[in-house]
Image (cartoon, rainbow, N blue to C red; front, top):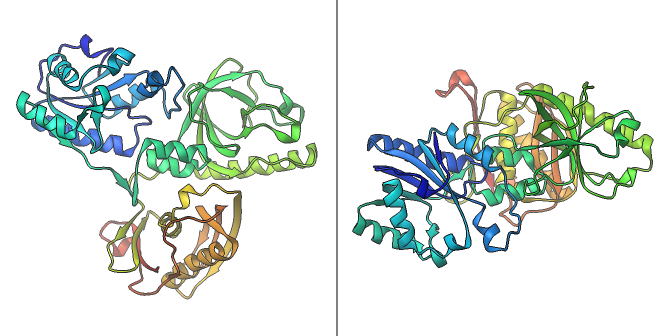
Length: 450
């Protein structure tokens, strides 16, 4: 992939298909847009490219105020290259850039990039005062020899995927659902710096991470993480917060790397966030804190041993229905299927946005057969949500047969403003094993009474 440091540094004759934007995090929606553009460009024997701005336009327009981001420019360029783009233009954004008219900007795009087709979203606009909206672009393009392709919003498992929404999920600590929308686990790189070294004094030495100021950081709490060093990953448990039990005064990011005892001060590492374990809390003393850290370490180690993956395909879809909600769910295993069914039920009710205290529970469910077990499992969760004011967000099926299952679940206290499911029904219920399904996956269909 060729990288140009400004529009004026390129001299492409075209034909070129181009998309313009910030593309923070390069999430599933961004990659879907780029894939569609590349496919069309290839059929037209055209190059496919991306134009982005640096620094972020809002930072310049707000007098240099830092803008929280999901990825650095360097990380973004690596991800752009991974999509198969032919070129990327990183154009400097200044106050002068902001005053460029839409017509002037389009003239630059044609003159230096040879644009023959411009790919944009429905609310896209460029130029001074955002005068170059979709209607303007189409009229200008028809008069100056390029086409405008408007890509609709990208939906994944019933939700619109946007960088702002992913940043919100990370900022409330819901790293699992952020990963699903990104299509990868969220990572935070940084330098290991000296801290108070209190962790070492209580038997749990930590690597204190100093990230970029603009990086989106997960909410205070304890997380199961992978720590990457020299392209190798190590299991770790990470605390983000002020360390209230130890009378901390400022927010830190501290990773305890499990069974690791090397000096890595001054080294670059990257934390890959897998799952939120609990909230940060004040303990009555050092001994209760040490006992909890040991439990956190063991829980993180057990979770990371499973090495949970971010699904490359949608785990469920909503099926149009005249009155109630109907979902179709898939999973590579029976355990994954039942976990995905629970995730779908709470996703429909806005679980991702709940930001209350963390709740962790274990369930043992029994049923007469696969279908009955699924209904009893989902009904138990629904009853707990109704009576305890809990919205469950993450599910780990520890063991399962056709008639019994053991499950660990994590959620938040709170309620969603979205429509509420009243009951799980047996109507048109079906659970299909891989040998019965053409997809080779476990499948289920469930109807919810709303």
